[in-house]
Length: 537
Image 1 (tube, rainbow, N blue to C red):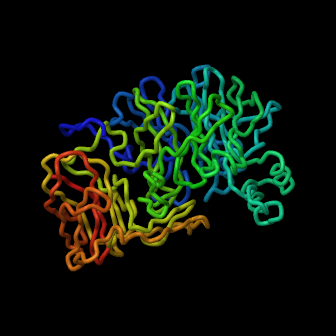
Image 2 (image 1 turned 30 degrees about the horizontal axis):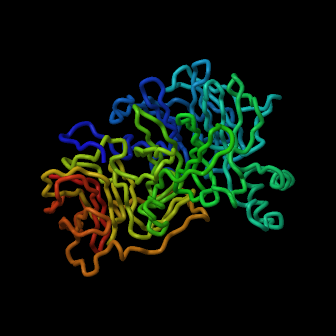
Image 3 (image 1 turned 120 degrees about the vertical axis):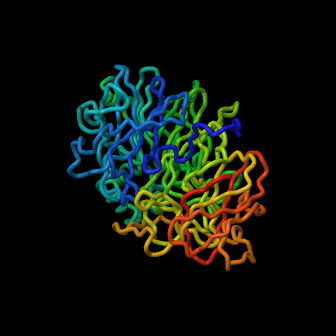
């Protein structure tokens, strides 16, 4: 870990923006002496992706505890196609050679409808924090909208004056051996991408409309200077990308003389990277940077994931000499309320990025000080041993989740065996830990009242709750067990009263050695509870 805090001072935790803010698909960029986070904008408890206008936060590069809301930088209603599609998906911003800032984005409709057949739109501003004005769409040299490939999740790189634009999404229909004989696959592409059967079949034989593509732009930041081409192979079998094929979320960074292509893999819970000596070709798979379920970290399996998993999108950025990966987590049992998180990363001497664990301390320059009160929702691990994987869905089944009601944000649906983890705290003379808890009932339970959302790709996993529960734990008295590791020994207990319907503090004595450690809280009881705060003395 990094330096140990010796006193309570400015700290930052994950999620690092205000708890009521939901900015996923983060593209961090340093402009001048500030780092700006550009991204989509979800609604708290929303019913589809990206329901709100683009809003930007920034922080001084010298102090990542001080994030400032810059305000709305671009309204969806400014897009020429707003009447048909209301929601702006994952954007990126680049500084052009003229010194101005250019915003690239795509529009979509409710539940993702229409998100795969619009153009890449561009807006411009004299400063990174807006307000941007619509400029036009990415176009072919003859002025027609570029749509040779699927326009999705654009990313931009200014490489010493040359402007490269990246885009694309990819499903595996065309990699299946019976694709040309299977009408269901063909129709799925036709419906999803709004293309004719003839085009789908012709392009599948020659150069698929799917997959990540790259194109160079003219000085006007709109017109293709070079034709778009695939950045990495579309057909991944036999390539370095076979186990982690591209899905979406293109992002490009130049690190020294190397180019790092960041993307979300088809596994849909991880940000991966590929490396090349060039910005537009010869990329080789590098590895996984971060998974929002810690899958793959130290061999962790998908069945043992530590959170509900689902869509991820983000990138890396060097800030004040250190490198970080920005990603998002899922809340509200859905893919539609995603919050920005970040972790510090390192590069090995040969240019690899080892996978990092997700933590609660994130951008903090060390562990959080175990003193005072913290919101319970900064938990980086939350599992009942059988957490689902979501994709364009809102679950109605019961499992522990981060949610809100009114101005309160808390962990709900905590049942027997639920494990809640925080990494990391610095403990010094901590002898008591408190919690703010209430019992969960029909009056205070969060009930989703929007349209039904359940994608066919969602999954649940093999139950591993036996690894979390302690056989023989008394159930007459509900308790929160305190541990320092996922399956470690008990360091103490916090007795609860499960009939308490109002937020109430409960305290327990603990035996925690001084030093840096994770904190795990495991619930044992017959009824559901909700957790709002954790407190140290």
